[in-house]
Amino acid sequence: MFELIKIKTENLSFSYNGNRILDNVSLEFREKTITAIVGPSGIGKSTFLLTLNRLWETVPQSSMSGRVKIRFDGKMQDIYGNGMSLTGLRRKVGMVFQAPNPLPMSIFKNIAFPLKLAGIKDRRTIDENVERALQQAGLWMEVKDRLNDSGLHLSGGQQQRLCIARALVLQPEVLLLDEPTSSLDDASAAVIEELLVNLKDNCTLIVVSHYFDQVKRIADTVFQFPYNGISQQ
Amino acid sequence: MTRFQEAICEKLLLSAAWTSGSIVVFIFAFMLFLGLPLLSGGHFFSLLTAHWAPQQGSYGILPMMAGSLFLALLGLLFSFPLSLGCACFISVLGPAKLRFLLRKVVELMTGIPTVIYGFVGLFLLVPLVRDIFGRGGLSLLSASLMLALLIAPTMILFFCDSFDRVPRSYLDAVDAMGGSKVQKLLYVMLPNSVHGIAAGITIALGRAVGDTLLALMLAGNAIHIPHSCLDSARTLTSHIGLVFSADFESLEFKAIFACGITLYLFTAVLVLVVRGINHRLRRPL
Image 1: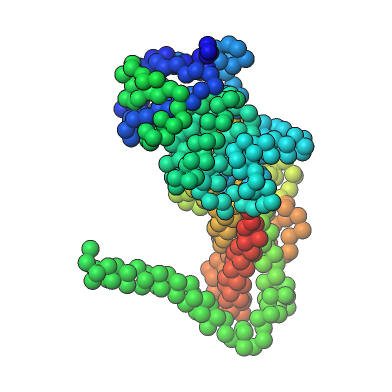
Image 2 (image 1 turned 30 degrees about the vertical axis):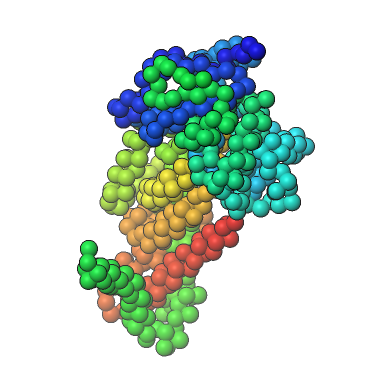
C-alpha cells in the first residue's frame, strides 16, 4: 500500500553547549505508522524528538540547523517557517515524556487542560473529549468513578497512560513518545505497547526506545542512532 | 568524612540554629524586662489605646500604631502588583537577555542603602506629590511610594525563586501541549508558587513595618491618626528614633518600650496572618 510521508527532516543538525548532538540527519517518517528510534544513551534520540515539535527552543544554549517538514492539511510545511504557529504545531504534534508528568490537579482537569489551553469552553465538548481520550488510552474503566481524584495519586503506569490521554485529547496528527515505558513494570509496559499499536490508525507515532524486544513487537520502521544515513526497516 | 567529624558538624549547625532562634526570644525578653515598669503599673494597655498628648500627661502610641499599619499596608499595596508583574516578566514573559539584565538590576537594588531612597523621595517625589495634590508632600503617600520601591526587590527575587522552583516537568508538559507563556504562567506557575509568593509578602511586610528611615524622612512625623494618604503620619519606628535621640529621662522615653513591644508583636501577628492565609490556600488545583 502506498503510504504518504508525514514527516521529513533535511540535513538536521543540533548543538547543545557547543557540542554537536545531531549531524545532518535526513529522515522520512510514513503516515500512520510506528517508527522506533533506537541507539545508546546520550546519542541525541530524545533531542531529535524535540526538534519535531520545537520544544528544544526552551533549552538555553542550544541551536539547530536544517529543515523539518510535516504534512498538515495535505501539504508539507516547514515547521520552522514564518507561517507556522508554535502553539498550533504543538497541538498537532503531541508529546509523551520518559517520566510520567501529570500536573498537580485532578484526573479530569489533567485531560481537559489542553482543551482549556486551546480555548475550548463548552462543557459538553470537554466532557466528550476527555472520555474519548481516556478510552483511547485504555484508562477510562479504571478512573471513571474517580475523575476528581488527583492525577498524582495514580500508579506509574496509569500516570503514563494519563499523559498519553492528555496528549491525545486534542487529536494530534503526530505523537512523539520518549521512552514511554522505561519507568514502568512489564505489565504496564505491555498495556502501553498495545495502546500504541491501536493508535496508529489515527496518528503517526515516533517512539524512542531502549528495548529491542519492544521495537520488534510494535515498530513498522526502525532508525538506528547515531544516524549514518542507513536505516533498518 | 568520619562519624566524629559528622557529629561535630551537626553540633555546630545545631548550635548556630539555637543561637539565632534564641536571640529572637532574648530580644523579646529584653523588651519585656525594660518595659516591666509600664506593664506592672497597668499603663501598658492605656498606652496602646490612648493618644499622644505629653502636655496632658498622656503618652499613648495609638497614632503611631495606626501610622505604622497604614504605611506598611499602603507600601505593600503599591509594591505587590509591581513586584509580581516584574517577577513574571523576569521569569517567563520577557526576552531572554532583558530578563537576565533586569534580574541583575533587581539584585543590585537590594543593596542600595535606604537613605538613598530617602533622598530621592525627599528631593524628587515629595515636590511631585505636593505639585499634583496641592498638599501632602511629606505624607503617607510619599513615604509609602518610596517604601514600595524599597521592598519591591526583595519580593521580586522571592517570587522569581518560587517560579524557578516549579518542577521542570510541569513546564515541559504545558509547552508540549501548546500552551502560551501567559497560560503557563497563569495556570501552572502562579498556582504552584503560592507559598513562595506568601513568603515574599511576609518578608516584605516585615521590612515595611520595621523600616525607620523612609518613614522618618518622608512621612512628616505628625502625631495623629491619619485619615487620608496625603496626611502626615508618624510610625512606631520613627517615633522610637525621634524620642530616643531627644532624651533618656522623661516619661516619653519610657513609652518607647511599649512601642518596641508593640512593634515586635505587630510583626509577629502579620507574619502569622500571612501564614494562615497561605495555609488556607494549600489545596489541590
